[in-house]
Image (cartoon, rainbow, N blue to C red; front, side):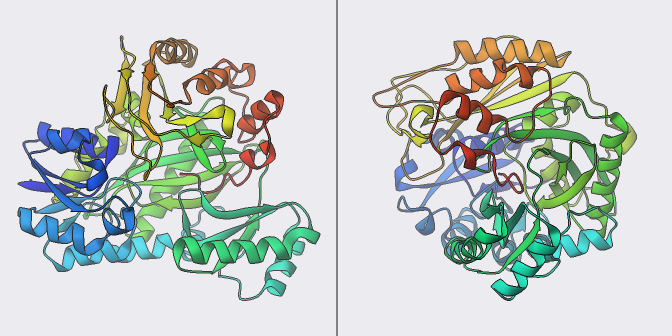
Amino acid sequence: MFDKVLIANRGEIALRVARACREMGVRTVAVYSTEDSESAVVSYADEAVRIGPGPSKRSYLSIPAVVEAALRAGADAVHPGYGFLSEDADFAEVCTDNGLVFIGPPSEVTARLGDKTAARGLMSEAGLPLLPGSLDPLSSAEQAHRLADDIGYPVIIKAAAGGGGRGMRVVHDSAEFEAAYQETRAGALALFGDPQVFVERYLPNGRHVEIQVLADRFGNAVHLGERDCSVQRRHQKLIEESPAPRLPSGLVEEMGRVAVQGALAAGYVGAGTFEFLVSPDGEFSFMEVNCRIQVEHPVTEMVTGVDLVQEQLRIAAGHPMTLRQEDVAVHGAALECRVNVENPDAEFAPTPGVLREFRPAGGPFVRVDTHGYPGYRVPASYDSLLAKLIVWAPSRQRALDRMDRALEEFRVEGAGVRTTIGFLREVVADPGFRAGEHDTTIVDRILRERGEPGSRSSGEGVSGAA
């Protein structure tokens, strides 16, 4: 096992990784920006290194700064968490070139799967079902328009280098296609440095279901069941759960089987997620692979008892997996709610500030992954995720009741600080959600019923949500 791991991230995931390392007797190095000097992981880790000023590009996204910190601290490996550099193939390669183990798939695998068109082509060859669309980037607006007309509307235009729910646009009719195509290309260039896009059929009333996989360097791969991530707003997930309600077990097993098939075909190593869209008639289609630990990984941990971060560490250290498919069993039901520092009454605008009161929920089978504490100043420069509230129960209905209770007792207060807790309770209480009859339009519907402006876009672009 590693002696020392540098955690190239911040917030709750940095603390989550540090805790997993401590249980395994692995020392940790936290990195932080000047704006994050009071972050919980800075005091929790064995060492902490400042890597730059507040802006991410000069700190958490600076490959030279992160690698230099790892080398100076004498780290053996780097855990990238999620976001930031976690799916940057160049970062993985630079780590390897400097004698650092990158805790994730090989750089060439990340590069291949990070290109959405290349990933679609590879998965098509591996036998995974795809939505109708292009397997290569589209070279012109005319070519893209013809393909969209042939596929039939609605379609979704996606950045080939996109991810995290960004760089995509839904088009509902031919007349609006060309403007949407140009806007998506411009956005893709600004966000990812690559203007290439592709087009595929958009499924407006589908469900977003993903399969968690683990694979080692010895040709072993397993899946750990599914997560339903259909509750989303503007491509960003709000609530995740496992198992997915009202999905036939045979369908889930088939999705798991093809996800493992795809992982082996790609030469995948580590923890990864295969994302699918499931249509109302039960057909499923591959969307993309996330080459990292997911924000929502705790729900899988709660129903399987498998510590995914520790499995990442063991696999990266060169150990063959001892977990076999027949060992994986799902017990009960788990849900995760993302508590963001945002104002749901102002189009979910971020509301950073100092937490005067921070009292997470507790009680049986309640888990809170957070970096918050009373007196913590939530920075304005980063993602608004403050905490993940996860509950488990023997059944989904009991888990929903437990989640509502836990949300009710979760207290966050501060001058100007608002959170999504109240809105999450609205979703949990929604009859359609409680019945498991929801799809990716649920948040759009709830906002429309509230009379919120811009609600149409909240349900669009399910593909590739973060």
